[in-house]
Amino acid sequence: MELDYAIVYSPKRKRLTITVERDRSIVVKAPTGTSIDKIQEVVESCKLWLYEKTHHEQKYHPPLHPPGKELVNGESLPYLGRNYQLELSDSSNEIQFINNHFLVPKAQAKQRGDIFKNWYIQQAKEQILPRVKVNAKRMGVEFNLAKITDSKYRWGSCTPKNNVIFNWRLIKTPMFVIDYVIVHELAHLLESNHTSIFWNIVAVQVPNYQLAKKWLREHGNVLEEDF
Image 1 (tube, rainbow, N blue to C red):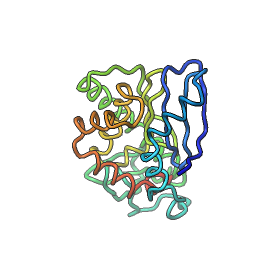
Image 2: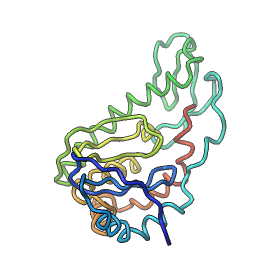
Image 3: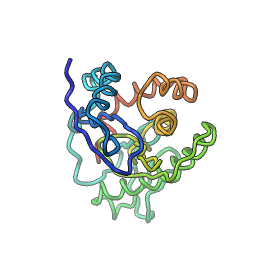
């Protein structure tokens, strides 16, 4: 079975990595000067994993339904793995999560995507980034920076400069899924590719990681909806 892939060379990169983007494209990132034979050897060693990844029924489809023009009373939005109803309020100046529902300023309802996206990003920074430090300490690894970004192609990534980056949409997922993605990226600091060693590292830290992967497969397209 033949696999098409793009090669991206970088003089700053110290190791070769292979990623499968959310559109199923395969990208090999390699240090400048890496031979084609070496790249082909690594791709061949990961061929079964790459084939399964690119042919799996991942949620790479368009959003289930187009977003509405404005937020409305009783509408539900996801947060930490559950859907909660929102209530428009004349007295609130900012989004609040109180008694298992969202309290949303009525004056900002027409902003829809922007207001909730900003709220989600802030929650991701407050809740995900501290867990990166906790997991890194437990795993005995050191990273440079941990960031929350806006990416529609991956849930997380680990850069050649040892930065770990996470999609703000993860704040919509259960905490066990967040921990899996964190550990997944931190594990790349120990093993750059998805080898058996890599998955053993993940399994030690997150024994139920297969459930987390399954959850993302089944709910990924919903998470990608921007209201």
